[in-house]
Image (cartoon, rainbow, N blue to C red):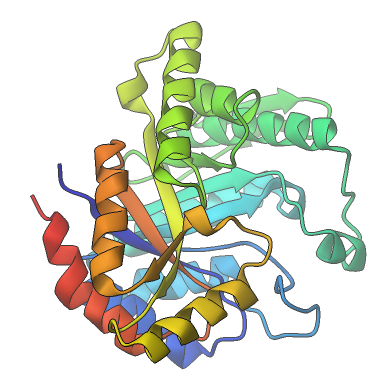
Length: 308
């Protein structure tokens, strides 16, 4: 079974020139996908530099030719959904139909507080993102939307032009009760971030169960996972130790099972575990700075191991 590789970048502590280098490399080296995230602030510090997602997607539309791209995921509380849908459809046209994007609940308290968004209790956050999925599904599937709910209100809202083709809508998160059910009910894909192979396989099984309950074919809902990229460029002990130290520094809040670490050979073995678990879409996730040498080795030595 082949694996399709993508990239996910948190656009924090990075220059536009480096982002451009990254998406050009992806576009020219067999990657299928590149996504950004939706934040005002870095996870590291409120004061660190951070770029906005929709504007970067416009640049991706103009400067790439092959990859599909999007945002995994937009925080529903931050965005007027009508404006977001118009932006995504416009960028879809600019790119020739290569856009995919997702919605999520948001979580990073400092940016909610600083920009005066309500960080609701977890249940209400999930209620809001579920209503956002209903609204966005209508915007993408229908010319006109009328919706009068608890969190969103739209009256006779026309969405023209229409997307060029199917514009996939994803949901992101790890929840098996609400998020997996929303994926089964509304989404074209579920992004399951930073988990190990066993946890990934389990969550895909949960999705299948929800699809059965919702009367939907599980084949209609793609799944993907993203794994932190901390591969060493070689099996030199000092190089590997430095890469491991970067992983611990940048991802103290994430489980090591959701990271790609070690030598190139060890990363190949790790990816084979995901392959055995049924994963077909894996995105390597960067917390800049980027180890360009390791990325070059990944493209040259790791990716060819998983081609059909």
